[in-house]
Length: 443
Image (cartoon, rainbow, N blue to C red; front, side, top):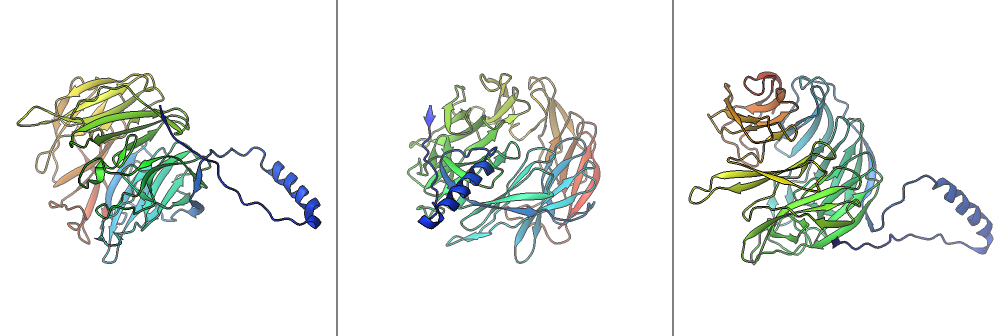
């Protein structure tokens, strides 16, 4: 068992004089009654501050500004997206929501991350998101030495904004309901390593039980490199590392998965589970291949059915990318691995039986789909005039969406996109064989 330490929060007492004893007694009684029915806070160091934020008041439009960059549909009608907006001064992101299958989008939040760090020059920051349900979403806004966590449970009409003095690593904060959320970050940012842009002195797990109004540290490990040389992904010890991916399925059950380095630069992958909201973690017995990279968070379709994709490779000298898909049907008590002879780590998984994956490249528009739990894959081709298709998302074997554009040379900072470029949203109703243009975003 991986036991995490905690300590009680501190409180500031009231200074009282003898003349006010009777008033103080009455005040204590009133406070005691007013506290009845409130959820007790977990023990641990308290951190952060919170404020309610009104959502954007934009009206639905078929041509939102910016470039579609993230897409997640919840069902046939309701979904979320994020657009990247470029200007000469800054880059910001807009969170959008649709209620008509992606034809019209309403802006519900603007996110403006910090673009550079002291001594590091200009950087390229994003706003990671977790689109949980039709009404619940979480957005992370990076600042110079703090993180703003935006959380909504009413479809973006209002957001609870929490501020933590910490640095972002690689897994976004998650909420499972209106109250319970977790954030895995680095504390004491930016830490002691000048060669790293985001690693601090500790990798810390924060938890909130009041919708982000307050956060508590419930676990941490030293953010020391496991390699003799600097490598961002080699920091920390399992299950708290720079490459950890996080998923929670309830206010008590959660998962941390990742790949760690040894000093000889070999790697190993691991999976941990908690059943007490993240206070303690147990290592799960699962047979990951020696060369596996577990860099995708577990995905659960119900309390019992879940999936973990793991990247592997074929034999030398080709080292063809392959995948191991681990599934559970008993809530994670046992996992069964299935080998797939090509890379499907970035597939869109509809359930533990159906999935759809883009297998093409520039000028090669192919896909593969399965309906029997990864045993057999049917391949097909897409006929399109777009240079790029990406961001695929399916809610059923037939119904899906994708993002497309005609930009051929994309670089990480998005500089290949220019003012006036069109990024198109596509929809399919026949499993990806044909696609229809339903909306556009304008850079």
